[in-house]
Image 1 (cartoon, rainbow, N blue to C red):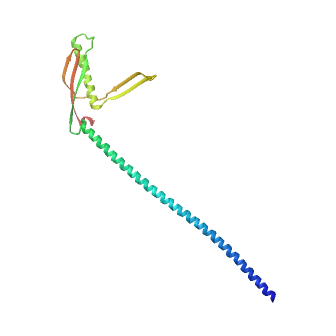
Image 2 (cartoon, rainbow, N blue to C red):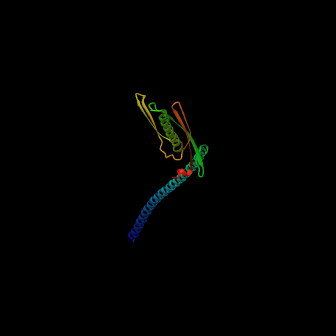
Image 3 (cartoon, rainbow, N blue to C red):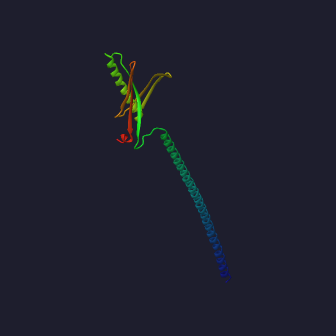
Length: 198
């Protein structure tokens, strides 16, 4: 009987010791799980903070974009006002209005003519062509092409070409003068807004 009590006691002690080991193992697993859970919570908190920072940066970018767009609108409005002021200073052809343009063309009589009448006729023809060119320049503008050839830091050749291309109709010759081989033709034209609608 002594032995049976001793065996029971040993069994009880071993059971108790085994239970402690199980409790120790369970506590370690719980501690590891809690540590991993705390780590995951920290990562989630960091991710939330990064998301909040990204949202704040996106909001700042939206504000900056809006501010730049407003500045562009203000600059555009100012530019339109400047253009309107410049147009008000210049003569601008508006609807239901006409504009009077007057020019003087000049032509020189050639030296090798057979008579003074021929010299006058050729000079007048050149003066009329010059007046038409001047009207076209005023109405349509002039295209200018320039070219410089430079060698050894010196200008070798400089070329400037001007081009005018326009259709001039209904121009009237007001006055023609011929003096000392120079013919001057004063020409005028009335243009309306409808002439440019074609």
